[in-house]
Length: 406
Image (cartoon, rainbow, N blue to C red; front, side):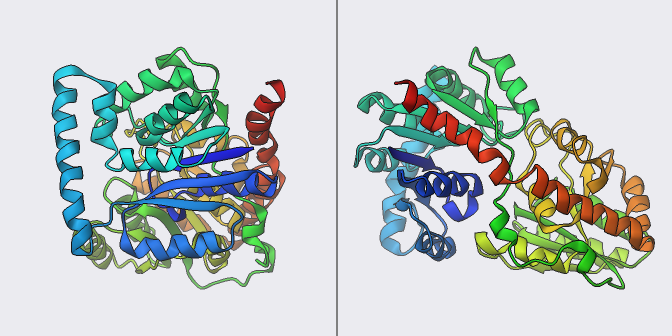
C-alpha cells in the first residue's frame, strides 16, 4: 500500500511517527513522510535520520533564514493572523486550520503530489490536511493523537476543538497514548474507541547496552530528565528542590532546550541548593537510549494540573524503561496506568511535594540494592511488555486489516 504520514514538526522530534514509518516500510509498504522544516539546526538531524530509513521525507520549509525564506514567511504570517481573526468571528474550522498550521497549504500540496491509500495525521494541527487529502482522493484517514491539545491551558484550545469536531468522526482509526486519553476523547466526541499505542520504543535502540546488574555503582545518584523543551512547569524546579533537600549526593542531568532565560533560573536554583546540574546536548533519535547507561534514575515529573500531560504517558517513561533506569513518577492518571502494571520499576509520589520526592531520592542514594532492583524491574518491563515489538501487531492491524476488509 501507499501510505502518507503527515507531521507538524521535524521527524527527528516525532518518534511516534518514525516508529510507524519504520514498521510500515519494513512490511514492504511505500511510505512517505510529509512534514515541516522549521528549525535550521534540525534539518541535518532529519537528513541523517532518513539516510538509514526505507521511507522518504518530503518537507515543507518554513525556515526563518536566509533572507529569502524570511520574506516568504511574511505572507504566511499575515495569512495566519487573518485566519485567527476570522475564527474569532465565525468559529470556522477552516479558519482554525489555517491559523494553527502555517504550512498547511504547502503540506496539502505535498500530500497530494503522489497518490496514497492512507493519509495519517500526527497531531491535530495537520489533521485537516490529512482529512482533506483523504477526501479528495478517496483514501482512508488515520489520526495519531499524542496530545490533548484542546484541553484548557493549551495553546488555542478552542481552535483545536473546532478541528477535532470537524474531522475526528471521519477517521478510520484514532490512536492515543493512554487509556485515560481514550476515555477523554470518547467523552467529548461520538467516535469509535481509540486504540491505545503507548510511547514505547523498539528494542534495537538499546542494542549493546549492559543490563543494570552489570553496571558499576557510582558515588552519587545521577538523575536524567529528557524532553524537547526544558521549560517551566515541567517539574525541574521541584527536582532541584528535592535534590537539595536530600542533603547532597544527587546530580541532575537535563537533555532539552531551555527557553529564554529559564536555563539561568535553573542554574541559579541549583547553585543555591548546592545541587550539581548539567545540561546535555541534543542527540540523534536512534542514539538517545544508548546514552542512559551513564545514569541511575529517570525523572517523569508531569504536572497534575496540566489536563493534557496528566492524561498521557510521555516518551520519557518508556525511554527510561528501555534504558534500565529506576523511575520517579508523579501521580497522574496517565502515569499511574503504567506504574500499576510495573510498580517495581520505581516509585510514585504526589506532584508538588518536593519533600516526598527528596525522601525517595535519599533512599535510592543510600540503598543501592533497592536502586538496582528498580533498574532491573524497568529493564524487564521494557522487554516483556513495554516495547514496540510487543505492540506493533496491533498497529499493523489498523492499517492492513482495513485493506483486507475492503
